Image (cartoon, rainbow, N blue to C red):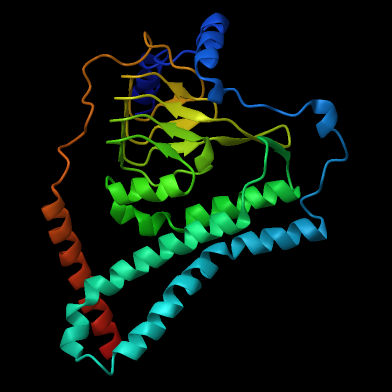
Length: 298
């Protein structure tokens, strides 16, 4: 098995080489948004902060509480509303409206997340020292988006998920199909029209380098296909019409000649119709409602 894995990775080397300096300069000239302005090293010099300082430890505890806080803020108001509605509705009517209550959980979670991102705000610039106030601001938003990944999973491939990330700051073109919910640093993500982002693709503009957090933009062109479980890191630029194989890692400009043109499918499967999605959601909604009702009876 190890030999087979070694042979597999050896056969896939060089699929996405780094472009030449002249080619990269040409691309950044055509796409000025890709060139991130970084502060000078002299301006950033100073005493390195400590992760064990009392203030840093306090902020770390706060970030660990983001997910429970989101869960409480979204669930508790719905429980109060459910309690107020229960005397007015029969048990059968409550069970019948089960998918509606589940939809309200999803909508309130999305709304609370967007309000949290707006309230916390984003730090200006693209590079900060670890454990600084700007770093913890980034970490809070990062944890906030991570806390709703499980909830957003039911929206894969839908326009609602695209709208959520657009409201969060991402640039997403028309006809984009997102089968992933691991998008963070949304202001650094630019996806062109009619592009398919495969299942569980990781878009990660921010990286830790030499004790600093560095954010670089990620741009995916039009009519592209990003294979499942691939990773697009800060500085990745995928040109129009490129196909990235599954399990690939891209952190720089992908030359059009290096992009996979072997005839791999642009869309892994036929998108389900809206009717089938609604029917599937209702089935899952009623099954969940029955399970919750059985737990309450028990």
